[in-house]
Length: 80
Image: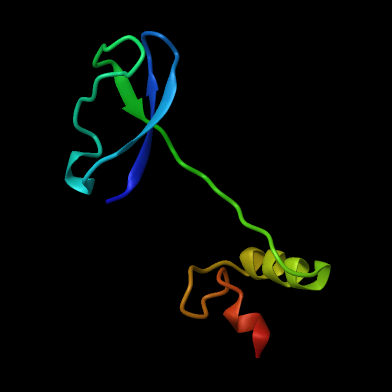
């Protein structure tokens, strides 16, 4: 089950909730004010590990575009 991030428009609280995908956009009560005036927000994350050369290769593969399966963003294409 994925974790989704929400923003309460009533009290400006940001929180996350573990919910089934089919309920991701269903109304949800804010844990602070208990109002159902929340919207799902875009979740972003970045991970960087390894040596400076590996980080540079990964950054360059993102610039090349694509997702995974050797499309560029996973970095596997740069290992060939």
